Structure formats: C-alpha cells, structure tokens
Image (cartoon, rainbow, N blue to C red; front, side, top):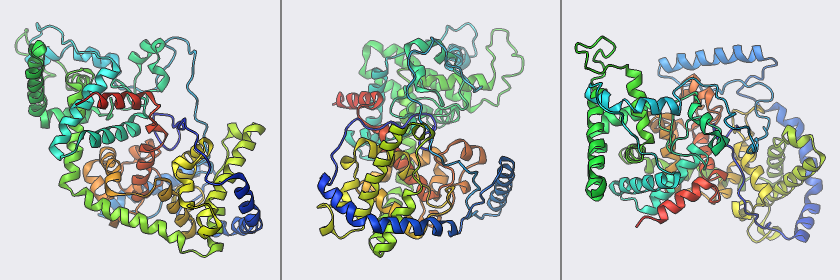
Length: 554
C-alpha cells in the first residue's frame, strides 16, 4: 500500500473536471515560459544536491539497518531524559519510489486469500462470543450467546443513529456528525470497510466467494470496524463506560418494546462483563472450587469483549463510544484553539510563496517536479509514459501560474489546482505523489525553503484553505492514531516541526507509513489529505451507504 493508507487502495474520483485554461491560452503561456523553466531546471539539478540533509543515505541494506538501530537508540535516550530528537531517520535509496497500486483482483479462486498474521480471526471472535453468557455468570450450563448479525447498510444506519446521539452532548448536529463519521471512515477503512473488517484485510476478501477465507483471516493487529478499535480500546471502553453502554441498551429497549427483553438481557450482560473485566485479576486460570463454575483465560475474555463489535445492538454503541471519547478529548483540551493557531500558521506558510522572486518560484517548481517519477508499471509502457509526462507537464504549468501576476494567467490561478479544476489524471498525480512529498524527511533530503513554500501553497490551494472546523476530524483521528496525550502534544505548535519518531513506539512508527519521516504538522495534514482524498469519494460503496444511512435519519 502506498504511503496514504496502511490497508486500502487510494483510488481516484470518477469525475473529470475541466482545465482552468483554454488550449490556446495554455500554449501561449507555455511558449512564454519554456526557456525560463528549462534554464531553471538545469540550475536546480546541480543545486539541489548541495541542500544539507538531515538524513543519511545508506548504500546497503545492512548499513541502513545499522543506522536505524543507532537512530532509535538516540530517540529512546532523549525520551528518557525528557528531550526530543530533531533529526529525521535515515533512508535507503528507493524508499520513496512510487509504487503501483494493485487493482481490485477479480475471478479469484473461492476462498483463496491467505493471511500472514497470528491474532484472532473473525472465526475466533465468533467462537469466543458464544461463551459470553457463561463468562459473566461463571456458570458453564448457560446457553450460547447469539450475536445479532446485520446487513452492512443496516449496521451503518444504526451506527449513524448512535453517532448522532453522541453528537448531542457536544452540540453537534446530524450533518456535522455525518461529516466526522465519514472522514474517520475514509481514513480508517478506505471508504469500503465493513463493521467486521479486521486490520490489514484486503478489499477483495469481502467478495462472497471469499467468505471462508474472510472468517479464517488472521490479522497482524487487532482493530475491527469503522473506527478500527483495538481489543484494548474495546476492553477499556467496557471497563470505563460499561454503565453508559448498558444504559443506552436499556434506553433502546424502551424504544423497541418488541425487542425489549433481548436488549435488557444484553444490557445486563455488558454490566456483568464490566465487573468481570474490572476484576479479571481474579485467578481464572486456577482450577475452580466448584465443578459447575465456568473457567477461562483473560485472553479469551478479551476476545469475547472484542466480539461485541459484531453485534448489531452492542457494536454500534461501542464504536460510537469511541467517538464520544475523542470528542470529549477535543473539548476538554480546547483542541479548537490549537487548530486556530495551526490554521493561521498554514495560511502564513502558504503566503510565503507569493513573496518570492520570480526566479525562486521557478526554481521551486523545478525542484518539486523533479521528485515526481513514474511507477515501474508506467515506465515500462510507452503509451502510459507519454500520458504520465503529459500530466506532469500540465501540473507544472499550473504550478508556474501560481507565481505569475494575475493578468498573465487565467482569471484565478489559485483555483486552477483546486480539486474541482483538476482532470482525473492530475487529481491522481496530486494525491499519489505531489501531496505526499515529505518536506524534511524524504529520500531527497529536506526541501529548500522555496520548495517548502511552494508545497505549502499548492496544498493550501488544493484544499481551498483550512479552518479549525475543517481540521477537527483530522485532529480527532490523530488522537485515535497516536493516543490522546500524545496528540495533545503534537497539536502544540511548539512541537510542530519535530519528527513523528518522537511520538510513536518504534514498531508502531515503522508499521504505519503515514507516520514515518514526517513532522508532527505534516502528519496532521496527511491525515487531512487522506480524509478528503479518493477514499471519501461518494461513489465508493461504503461512503454511499453512510450517506444513505444519515439521510434516513430524522
């Protein structure tokens, strides 16, 4: 997967928007600037190599592994002394090469998809769920717990309703909660995930022919569902908010008299499970005193708790409880104030490009365009290469226009790179390469100040600017990704330029490409990019289902 999402592909929107300039105007502008651009690129090709890099470029895999080990020792040492590592980690040549995104495979042999993980599969979770009644009562004679399996649209509708219920506590209306839910879903589930999607599941495993493979798929980490809740998250939610989850089930019982007995029973089960989890230090692993008592391991209890995310009654409430936790974090820590500061800083950064001399603007354009390379699949096919180069040239022209006086360009050059003014090919290239360029920690070394100014300008204009409200979903997801205490620090402008290696454990940092070799500020904007990129396209089935779900609510 490319640098955007760990689990899902990043496909372009289906709409093809018109260009900002008519062909004749493009040709006229291109002719006027051709000589200047060519001369500037020749200068930049030699100058960029002298930019001082914060990274070591290692000639061998062994050297890279050794340098990475030394780097993490420094990070750990500085953390233990309340300090921060300001250098970015080393890179190995080719790390940032564009990778081909596999298209959705079709006509796969039934149940042919295999997994490389070792954690609980859906089959394991369902098996553990059957013991829930026995676990909470300590009675081995209790019947199996039967979880409520729903269709995907119905589960999404229930989750949408629960999210709106949560939003009322924070004065957020249905539309605001719909936006938040869909943005987090676009980031966490790629716009296609289901309530039973496990971490690292490939999209093609959702096909009906892969049902058995889906049940037996063992993930490498435990997250599940729309918010990709880890087992630890679910267990903590039941421990800390078991009474709220149980109370909500009792509320729903009063609204659904035909199912009241079932809902009351599930409310009681959650309350009892809370007690079991709070007191799970009780030696369950020792032989019980009574032969009639039910005994199991703590791991099995936690798997059973995680399985409740699959239940059509309890699952939407647990998933929405995580939204409540994140919104409460945002309110209690005045995240909006931090985002106002961030917005002002990003606006200032974007404005720095406008102050540059014309020759420095052209040098910045040349610097960025040199980093855009075709993937191996594209480079191997002449027709694809020609189309790729044409797209690069059209984007180059639009970037150059940003630095020209308005009377020499289209009526509004800034709008030329807004999403709605890009062709499908330009949109794909912006998302797959331009917006993913690392300002400091890339293989190329840090961008020059002019290159960073252009990238800030391009990013700002592409999204039509920022605001605290628009960045809120990204900040909430940052808290979901890094933990609330860590996110609070990363949102502080004081720490904005620090490498993200200061804020993540080594395994988590290296296992999620979006976090690596970026600054804290960059990570927030990358989360924002993914949330507003192809994953959020309304033609994606998951996004479409959520739109229908929220539209169906009063």
